Length: 90
Image 1 (cartoon, rainbow, N blue to C red):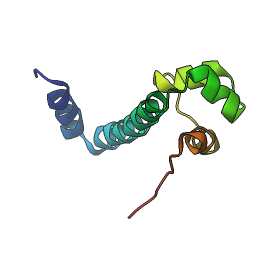
Image 2: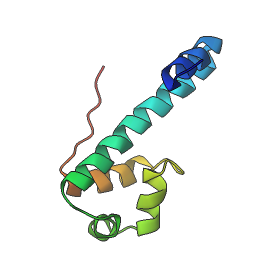
Image 3: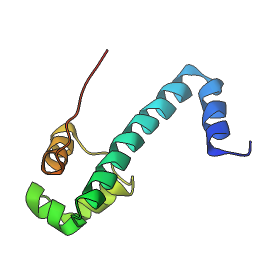
Image 4: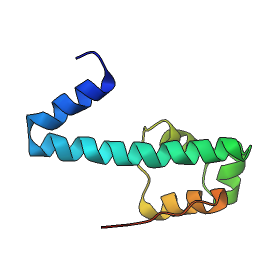
């Protein structure tokens, strides 16, 4: 394995539990990456975003560094001031 994608594919191939776990990680990573990019594009600091959301700046930092997974209500609180929406599709 030489790349991250090779490793992800390897983990997914081990069994259905690992595949599901890796896919969940990929989805959360995509959401958080989009939030970080939007925050930076808008020129908003973590501290400013935290004030807008009425949550601690340390919570924003932990979410952005993938040290914690936000609950749905927290995720929505963060996305709103960034002008982002969460869409569920089938």
